[in-house]
Image (cartoon, rainbow, N blue to C red; front, top):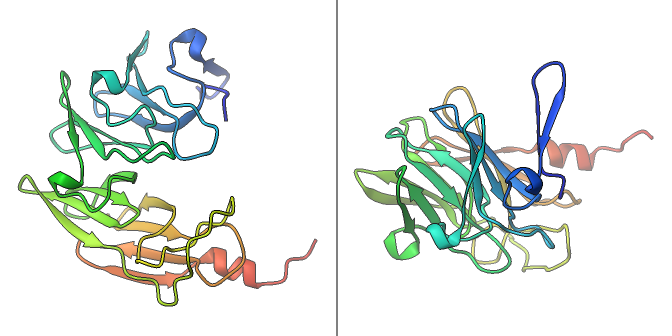
Length: 231
């Protein structure tokens, strides 16, 4: 962390840091919008990372935004875009969870649990198979449908162990939430989530979300950790 952001054009690298206009050099999210502008989110949930908001690169210069402009937090975990072209910025930090903010090109509009989100700790923003905007949080998905948030609580992990603050161990919480997750969208539109840390144990589960329900799958991480590795 702390090295700014770099672009590779196939021949050489070009790097940008705070000296070039980034809010901080701690980059947590990178997103290219439908207009071809690149957005950089800084900070996040990692201990010691500084949050400075987001920066937009139009090909020539950086424009910065932070909480004073209407972001939910200066720690931006994820960036996404809806079908109308509005940008969404999620937050989840050790300084507090603040939900998401929608940017319509002029103003930021903050959305939290009081507006219908399952959780204010948002890890990922993407669209489901029906192109609804969905926010992945520690409690599950919140999907926007007809200007209303539809909640899909994360399946309670059977035998979930109590919370632990040990660094690097990210177990499911006893109330069905999960400590941290990674999310990706496959070509068929399914949203895939991996829960659990990079440590041994049984709580490494790969889930798929089809816009209405979750399905559990064997996690490659679990298989790898349970198989003796040759050194």
